[in-house]
Length: 378
Ligand SMILES: [Zn+2]
Ligand SMILES: [Zn+2]
Image: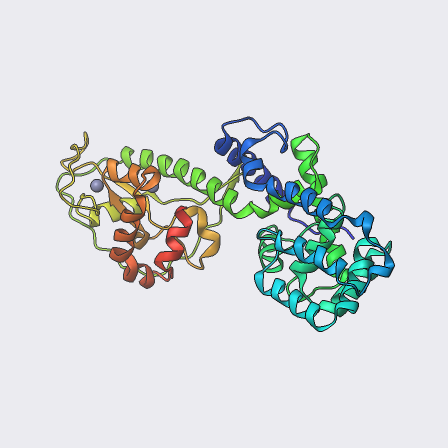
């Protein structure tokens, strides 16, 4: 089968992923095997597979050992060494099944590791263990990491949805679903290879897709900061009238504008007037503390303040209404604005502003919890 994938989105993601890896490692990305950050995050999976496979001592497995406990002891060890690749409930399930019926379990395990019909073996394993996807994916991955991968179904479903791939694995554990998953990952592998121009393994592909959300968040924040600076520049072009009164505005949900895509980046348009309204409404003070000092603008009597979108505009996809709403724009002094983007204690500022704006955001049809907001900044 061929994957229906949003290529533009995937290509954009890969551009960003490269930026993310290069920023985190401080190295140019020439291969995944040579990149210190990629290896420190994801390299354990390859090491684990090599070690666990060696410990299985498959060369000693013989048909007449089925039912003796030898095979299950080896596999139990492999499962205990799985790191985070199998959910603990599935590990317990394996142990329970083993206590119930050693012979059946060992017959299936022998079929999985020493048989030649992997599809059939997968289905036999489903019959024996039930739809324990992590567990089964792990066994096949241990058997042959060049052909197979571990799987965490709900997590991968989220990532497939992000990439616009209409495929899901949750509660669909079967040979057919697993082999389709492997084939999709194979196609993604080709795309990554073509984009980066170096050899990429199936396991590397797994790692890239696994890190997708974190990388996307990183890139979104960079795009956000660039758009922020552009807005700041526009706001600073405005001539403030000395006698200008604070204009009242009504907070209500606003319709979203479409993102503008240029150079592979998605920018959500920001309206200068809305930003100005928000700064005026805050009385040209910093909303972290109105006593924060700033200089006086060249073109007015007011203190210089900067607009900041509390929920970053780059996450507009996740919201029904526009985030470019006065309710979502805070007025900050330059110092606080930089701190919220780059500071060690930025979360304190975010929390304070969240409680300040919670009700207004809700009035603007923007629902978010503090936990969700903090996640966007991480
Ligand atoms: Zn900002
Ligand atoms: Zn401040």
